[in-house]
Every structure is written in C-alpha cells, then in structure tokens.
Image: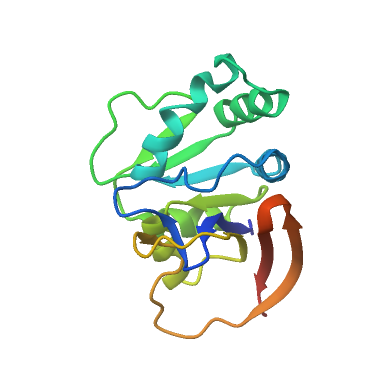
Length: 188
C-alpha cells in the first residue's frame, strides 16, 4: 500500500491561500525551497486539485528557463515535469501535458485505488482535494510548514472532519524567518 502525504505552506491562522487564491505570501526562503525540493524528489505521484494544478502548470514547465533560476529551481522544474501527476477536475483539461492524467470522476475512489497499488509515496495538494482525502481517512502523513503571517481568511489547510484523527509527531524543524515544519503521521 502506498503512503499519501498532505503537505503545504500555511499561515499561522491555518490558510494555504488568500481569499483571491494568492499563495505567494510566504516570502523567498532558499532553505525552505531546498527542503521542498528534497521532499518532492521523494514523491512518486502528485495528486492535484484543478486550482493547484493551474498554479503549478503556469510556472514549473519552464521554471528552469526563467531568468535567475537557481540550481534548486532548475531541479524542481525538471522533477515536476518528470513526476507523474493526476489532476482531479470536474471539467476536462484541454492539454494535460507534463506527464499528467486527468480524472473527472470520483476522486476518493481513484485515490483509494492508487493507494492500494504497489509503489512509492504520493502527495495530495490543493486544499479542497486534500480535505476530501482527509475526511475519507486516506492521508497517512501531514507536513505542516507554518509561516509567521496571519491571512485572516482564505483556503484552509485543515478540512472539517467527521471524527477525530490522532496524530504522532515525527519531526519538527525551524527554518530562517521563523518558518516551522511539523511532520505528523496518523496514529495506528
């Protein structure tokens, strides 16, 4: 069975994006970017909601060609293009390039099927899709990267759950600028 990881940057008040969808409020932290690069290189399949897919696909296909791209940005862009992606969307996507497959059907059914396969870890991204996976009990690990900023509103990292989920602390780490990683696994 494959592991499903949910991890994103979030504000201290628990949001991953502002009300207008902006996710660029975390600042440029090279150490944190290197951390995310390392994490992404260990993922075998990315699972995206349409919104996060649009954000990622608007930059990373050519992120390695952008002026001022660092070696980490080049590696991230290449890894992003090469890693298989499944995008869950109620509407078809016209040109799903970059090793991408679109699923317009039941996301939970497909994620459950993918988890049952042999293979390496998957990362679910996008607050709405991840929230559905959380409610279905499919998330095995949480990578919570908290930034010292309050957004006041927006897309929440945590979804409303039907039942309590007990977690076990796996790791904590502090990055420059007071950014804190807390990694949890779902208690057995």
